[in-house]
Image 1: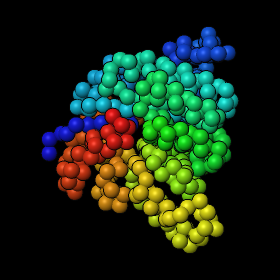
Image 2: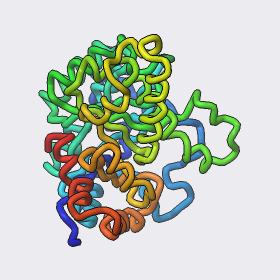
Image 3: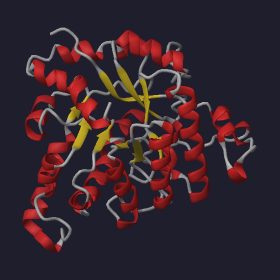
Image 4: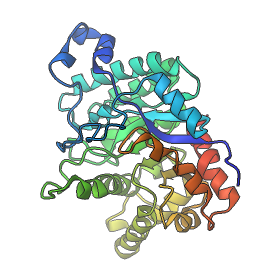
Length: 346
């Protein structure tokens, strides 16, 4: 199969903090925090060091760098998520969260979206203030041409996104017709502190928080209330999803309305009936199985560029996916392009 059109459903940029601080408004305008401290909390305390000791690892991204990557990979569009701002959920001060979210979004629009139409963006939302987050989502979509927003899988609020407090965000997203991507990153508070190697943490830090948020969103009735809400779970592969569907269905069938008062059908039915998406890894052995369970129209391809790997390694992903004999050409086309086009309304 020749390479079809491709949409990268989950790419990244490395933020320039000193540039972002130029976009502060209100009481933070003119502040020079980035010269002494980072604008966002640390992801997890592990010494990632961006370059991780590899001289050929990308440590800074500029629009031209992303454009070069897009053209090298044969990608038509890339949807760019943040890096440092993945930790927005760890911010303790709601006011700061609102200010830094607005500054990031305005900066991203000026630096990337206006630079090239192939570079798409998702808004950072101050989830500590759900009403403020809903307002920021409207601003980002209507004023900044963002194609959606991201929600951090880990927060300091000790409640999942299924909690009623977060309903304004979901209501706004459904009203605007834009998707929300729940993205893994920080691993604080998930029991990983006793690991002595970051590789062990990395194997778990994305799937576990996503499974927690998936459980909260499904079981607390978000999709029952907002059945047209587009939501995706990003950067943990897709193999965990059928497992969680089975686990939650078992609990639903065993405990019924006593434990699931907000549901009118099995948890797995919401995944199949509502626009729930997931990204995959090209080498996942369970990919065909997941496509059979949830449908091959719900899985998207992510490059994750420029995270974790060196430049040449990213270029192998699409050829590797195209060589998968158990996937039909139609399924590959959907994973690489059609599904992300539908999800992000590109």
